[in-house]
Image (cartoon, rainbow, N blue to C red):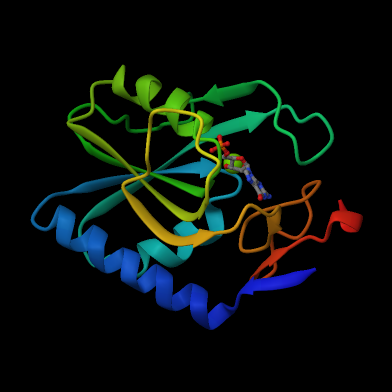
Length: 173
Ligand code: 5GP
Ligand code: MG
């Protein structure tokens, strides 16, 4: 395992992203929608840096994985949105933007619920991987095309609790 982003680097990048988000939503109420499970660590840190009125909701996006690093078909569950997003300014939060399929499928499902706007923020964006005509609006870090864990990101549901982001070596996968 090789550390890509230390705790200090993560906090600095998230603070920068929080500043951009705060400026963008100044004077409005925000509805943060976290994508379970990977976004929970980012979500917890990010919302405490956003001193603006906001709600927090969650959706689930799971790809039934073939092996643990190659995603399979994506299943999205928006049933857990409690107070709804109708008329609200929604900011989707995910751990990592890789091929873009998750956001590409999630955004239209949120759109159907009648929000005022939908934007997205991710901790990490993998270079040169995007396959869908969508881009995240806020990105804390660009990383090389490596399988990463930590700070919410898992390998076989493990390593989410690491306070840093690390790349697994090919022999660890
Ligand atoms: P996308 O749909 O953009 O290809 O991928 C987004 C999802 O794939 C993320 O929410 C995450 O669950 C998973 N993913 C993509 N790359 C990685 C990675 O390097 N490490 C981990 N742990 N998950 C990843
Ligand atoms: Mg995910």
